[in-house]
Image 1 (cartoon, rainbow, N blue to C red):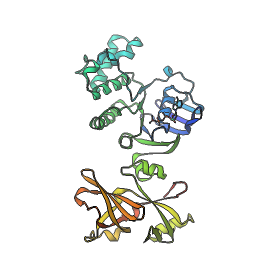
Image 2 (cartoon, rainbow, N blue to C red):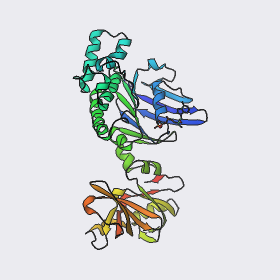
Image 3 (cartoon, helix red, strand yellow):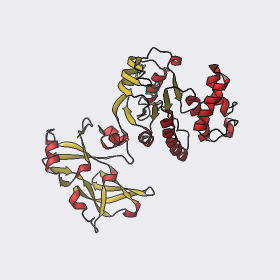
Image 4 (cartoon, protein in one colour):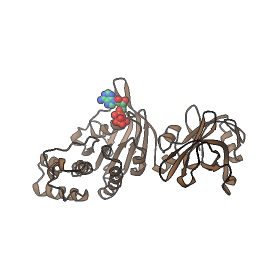
Length: 371
Ligand code: ATP
């Protein structure tokens, strides 16, 4: 069946008394795709997942699984596997029995249990730990057991709700890579929930950004990052977040605080079509070049559309990079992400330079981006 493993939300709405957790969600997950639902706490991510699992009922709209209306299917009929944040593994059972548990309940023959558990534990690197109890395992190994319990069911849809949030930073990074490799070999449709934008960008074939129950954008990680549809997506994804400053534009003339700058004709003509002067100007911190007053960057001036004088307010050392906060006016700051070896001193007079093609423009009232 061509649609096997496909999930489609159509006008999917879920209300709890007074709260609209999910508001007319339209979203298709392709068979075999890794789709990540991303958004802040309370935006409705888990609700969307629970609707697919059959743990919640839709208030309105429809949900399709394998191309068929599924909202009335019982959870057991859906053949989806789920891994939660607080994964449940049985403390009194060893690794093998924890993973075999569901199969035993369904009276799967012993030989098949051995074969299926064997395949999963080998895939997850648990094959040498089969007789260990959970208390004899590390956090990461326990997480793998929980994943094993979901995988062994061989479901065509795998739902994951912040499965890495209990792991330390290093393990999370390792597990992320493992999950991608695992998915390549396993091939199930994966719907993955997280509030962590790095996790979303690294794991997703596509990322769906939710805010207060509403879908903001669904796109490839690259487009979510470089072509955000609004200020919410632009600032939720990216660390430090995109700089947003109010500007007034008349023709090619841009007023930013006390500074007056010039836009190239083409960009100015494009913006003029909107017949408005007030804009929010957006710049990613890595697009901002910090030039020291006494050593201008050779050639940088020619490419930059914007050059704004300012003063370094604060530097945050991140290791390989430094976040430089530059004050460019009263209550007007820009953050720049620069290599550590180009460090500047706090209090130093600098200019910030931004290439014209790396500027974003948003309508202030709605936050909508224009391209
Ligand atoms: P988190 O990242 O914190 O888990 P989330 O994005 O997964 O958040 P949901 O758990 O889907 O968000 O919740 C969405 C909204 O619906 C929230 O306002 C939440 O309080 C509400 N909600 C969720 N489940 C219920 C419930 N069983 N009863 C009442 N309200 C609920």
